Image (cartoon, rainbow, N blue to C red):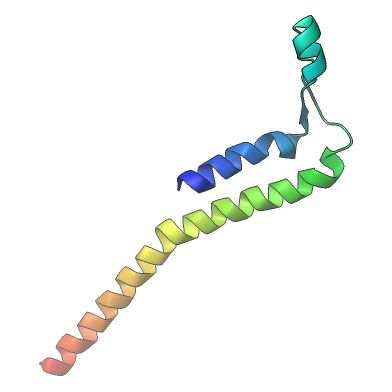
Length: 85
């Protein structure tokens, strides 16, 4: 869960195209933060795909799979008790 959260949060600046000018941050104490740019055209769709895929896979693993396993076990136990009776 922590790996998925940190990966998703780490990819958000890449997906939005957040740019930070470190040179002006050090020299003028002004980071000049802006969104967009040339790199977001390529990296934006890839990072959004990873973000949504990782979120969906985490939800599928932590919620849907245990529910399906519970339903399967309930079905097996009902069939077992019907045969025994």
